Length: 284
Image 1 (cartoon, helix red, strand yellow):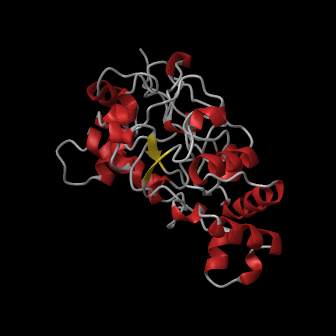
Image 2: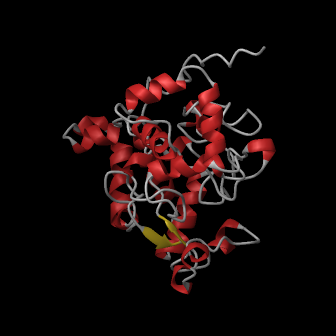
């Protein structure tokens, strides 16, 4: 179902539409496009490590990847369906899905539900994280990182990047204001800054607050930030140094951190490819 385009209103969009294998599970666009070319409001992060994160979406308005999967088919700029019953009608019209839902959710009178759609896609997404050279280094393989990468890791820790970009995902486990020290849009050149979680919670304390992004696969998943406003990773590192830490990073330090980030790239999962699609319902 993750690769199924026939669920969308225009027949061209699937979950994988915004999460490409050649872009490490992202799409390389500042903001993604959904049905009929409609622009999404924010950048699509990589799906490869979404299972590690404490909430879904930049503003954390989805509690889990399962909830995110449940609601995507009715997003006006994603799949475009008016409601989930319309999705069920499409699924039941494609031979194969009824049998697979029955096998995946046995004992249910009607296993083809919105909740089970989310559970199934979430189960697939939880197979996608893969170990990186950095994980091998943490396991004790000191040769997994080059001397330059190790120096970059030390700088990453010393200046405070790891205070937010922590945990198994090197981020993705908390919220933080983008622009603790200075306004982020002044550094990224954005004319109309996104208000972040404040639009969700209606709380002024959440103004410009976003989920701290995971840095796994970051080298291959630009452009960066919630609005895709910065294309170059080294520049993004500089923006973070300035806005979050109040530091004007030297060329040497910014390059060192960027070099370390290259050790966070995983391989593309072997199961991350579209299966042979079920045939369309025969037409009379």
